[in-house]
Each structure stands twice: as structure tokens, then as C-alpha cells.
Length: 85
Image 1 (cartoon, rainbow, N blue to C red):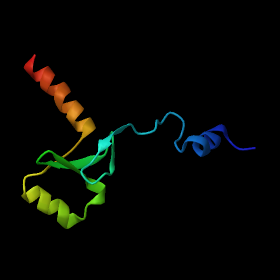
Image 2 (image 1 turned 60 degrees about the horizontal axis):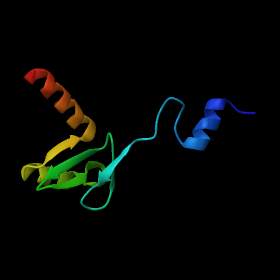
Image 3 (image 1 turned 120 degrees about the horizontal axis):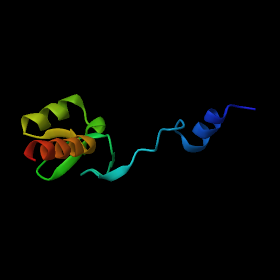
């Protein structure tokens, strides 16, 4: 007999109270981007940060790419609304 939390983790892959990350979209190289993943945006293309080498990240930043995440975009919209109103 094992603890119910362990059984839950085996079934879902996540501890109780923690939800599966929400899928948002695919990046320009067909990697899945989830809600809290960080990615680089440049020229309407997105690159998942965890799949890039350090040198690649530095080059993207030198070219003007912006590192962000979907949760950060949500916060920016929320606080921008609060500042404007």
C-alpha cells in the first residue's frame, strides 16, 4: 500500500495541487511552448530558450531578440492596464 500522493504522481506525473503546464503554441522550430517557458522573439519568430546554446542566445540578443514568456506577457498587460487606468 502506498500513499495517495505517490499514486497521484504515478498517474498524472505531477504532485497533487500542481496542474499540467498549459500548451500555448509551437516555436519556429516546432518545439512546444508551454505557459511558463521562456522564449526569444525576433522578426515574428519564436525560439524556445531551453533548446538553444548559450552562444545562440547571445547572438539572438545582439540581433535584438527579446527574451520573454507568456506569463510575463500576461503580467505586462495586467500592470500596463493598472498604470493607464
